[in-house]
Amino acid sequence: MLSSEGFDFWAGDYDDFILNSTGYPFDGYYDLLGYVQNIVEINPDTLVLDIGIGTGALTYEIYKKDVQIHGLDFSPKMIELAQEKMPNGEFFLFDFQNGLPSEVGCYKYDYIVSSYAIHHIEDPLKINFIVQMKGNLKESGVIVIADVSFRTQEDHDQCKIMSGDHWDNDEYYMVADTIVPQLEAEGLDVEYIQKSSCGGILIIK
Image (tube, rainbow, N blue to C red; front, side):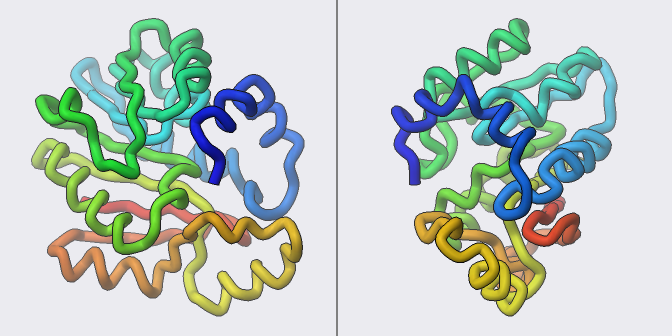
């Protein structure tokens, strides 16, 4: 996994890199982002937290509709680029592998969203983190996670074989058949949608 310094170095080229990428790990990237953006219902009071906001690719389109955006990332350069796009947003420099920062604790969000970020934490921590996020939702709030993910372990393993040396062994991709029952056991209402060969959407209420 890249350090915060590594993401700082990558930040300036990140958007162009993804735009010109094909196949794993970014197959269907913009379709996934568009799906998340369309889930968010726009009204003057909507408050959205973006976990691992990066350059703001996911929430910028939502921000342009006058939605209040909070962003969390551990890369100062990524936050700088996101803030250039969203000057009225509020941003928190924090590594979400350690959960959520105390500054976020006083807010209740309509939506907590994340794209291509949560794969940086191992599965048991994912479960704990999602349960923690649920505590920061309004009663009708929704968590929407878009990431490299697979419906079955077989799909995961096949992608790994096909990707060869491009496969990143330092990342932990969601497998719906495994993570969905674990989240349901925590009392959460969960839906999983596979959107591309290696990309899916996890919706939690």
